[in-house]
Image 1: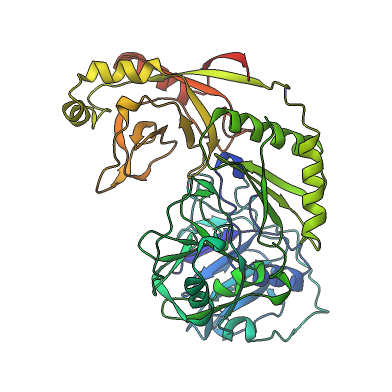
Image 2: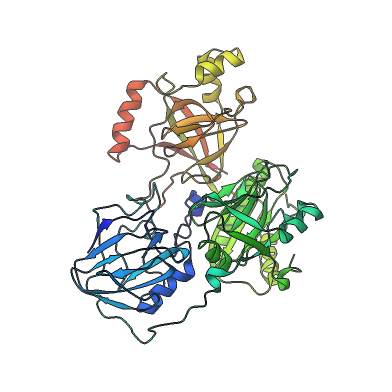
Amino acid sequence: MVKVLKSGLYSTIQDLGRYSYQEYGVPYSGAMDAYAASLANMLLGNDKNAAVMEITMMGPTLEFNCDTGICISGANLSPKLNEKPITLNQPTSVKRGDKLSFGKLIFGFRSYIAVSGGFKTEKVMNSYSMYQGITEQSTVLKNSDLLIDASSKSFDTKHAGVKISDSHFSTKHIEVFKGPEFDKLSKAQQDLLFSQHFTIAKENNRMAYQLVEPLENSLEPIITSSVLPGTIQLTPSGKLIVLMRDCQTTGGYPRILQLKESSINILAQKFTGNSIQFSIPAFRLSSR
Amino acid sequence: MIYELTYKTYGERSILIEWPMAIDEHILSDILRFKEKIKNRSIEELVEVRSAYNSLLVVYNYEFLSFNDVVYNLKELYSEINQHSKSKRKQWKIPVCYDDVFGIDLEEMALEKGLTKEAIITLYSKAVYTVYFIGFLPGFMYLGGLDKKLHTPRKATPRLKIDKGAVAIGGEQTGVYPSESPGGWNIIGNSPIDFFNPKNKAPCFVNAGDTITFKPVSLKTYNDIKTLVDAGVYQIESEVIDG
């Protein structure tokens, strides 16, 4: 059991998402940065789909009431165990009564706490990922107790101290493919998409990231059709919206670009005011 | 009828198949036959197949190296479809209460259209609605078949909170809000039925291709049904029809 003393800014339990329920209108959900979440699990010797805690910008304070192992990957929120700094991407032993807390945000935006055996909160439709209306709790609440697998104490230390390339956090490049309606854009609009820098607007969350700079738009809405995490929609007012993991399953705005899956993870570590630039992998240009 | 389909890549693991851009029952039948065919193939690499008005999204669990091979296989499947196969479809009878506590936009709609509230309810209850697909929110049905006389523009300012079960009209579309959410449609009544239950194996009882009729009920009947629904014992009336 893990006791939540402080919940942090926005903390949720996530695995890699809820698959094959989209035809009922159920979003995928899952860790925003699936790469960092899987890494934390792998370093601890968990299954990569084990449920982790996703924390955002300001971390929670947690108290462990059993011995276990933890590993923290993703953004650096200055994690501390009993007030002593601990290293990211390194399995760490935790004793009963230990307190995990966080400090200043150094880089990135979302961090992942993996525990040995994974969190065992409510599982709905084969996934632990929290989502309002699907799971009883949609975020990690102060004073709640979170179940973990207390029998999993041992973890693998052979991966200890992996060096992670920091380009995952520093790069501005977001790789994209053409979206289904890309060809309806004028040549000038297409060129702008790849030459201009875009800024993350303050409207950014697990559902979508809006971008500040508008793109002049004369496209008609489409007949409602399926969308995916990573789809970039162009609204009638010219606003670009990048759909993220909790996005709805269908939409009526033209889908002009589609993020590469690795770029969804990169974008998940960006926040208000960060600048990005789209690029298209050359080898995919001719596939349509 | 065999349609001229378009196949597009959509990200690194999905193919989007598109029919002509129209909302049409024949297209829906064709889409659902193709969806069934792909699903019955139980292709191991398949994550999901979802339909919308005029598209199928086929999601694989690997990044395909050859778009052309994947599309070739899908085209093969499409050509093998028996155009006359009928799928079992259901027609559901959904109770709706139009009492003033629920139908908060009925009055305004009636004034605008020069109809009585009763006339709106009669027109709404006469139609048979086709479920095209579920999207937007868990359990939100996209329905076709709204009488032209009832087409009503969305509200200029969306409401921040629409009750679960609200039956509403937005432009040419109509539907039931399966959970509390913001929304800009005109609300004419409320249904006590659960359109989405995450605890059930199939969280929605309705499938794309089914049809729905709305049956007016009194406030008392509404409350009685609600009690049964909350207890998990209400049986929704339905009959099997040939699709």
